Image (cartoon, rainbow, N blue to C red; front, side, top):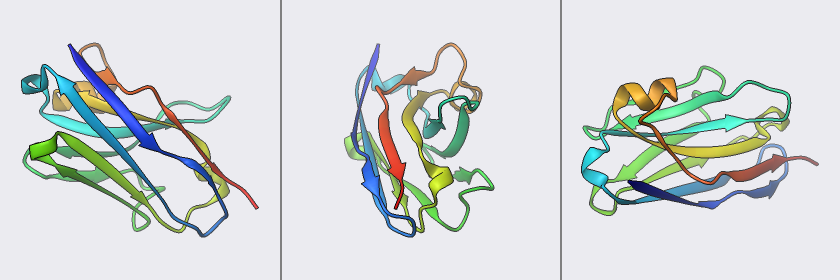
Length: 122
């Protein structure tokens, strides 16, 4: 069993920045990858970014050049630095952890954080 605790989120103006963090605890030996999903009302869940235990990263095309995912392996914590935020980035952001395949697919075996609201509005 893995617990993921998210922090960050909030209200920011377009063009602004925000950072999120997610700390994992429990059976962390089972975690080989972590990432961030987001979901807006009426929209499909979208995989935003992933990072493996080895440090390889991937990003959705919509956030490339604006968002950066990083991790502190010793603390089992993943971060998401969001810059140049746009109104379309508004969503609930969820931390994810598990095997690489489980994280990428959001399938059974993936663990989820509680979600944190990010609102980009003037």
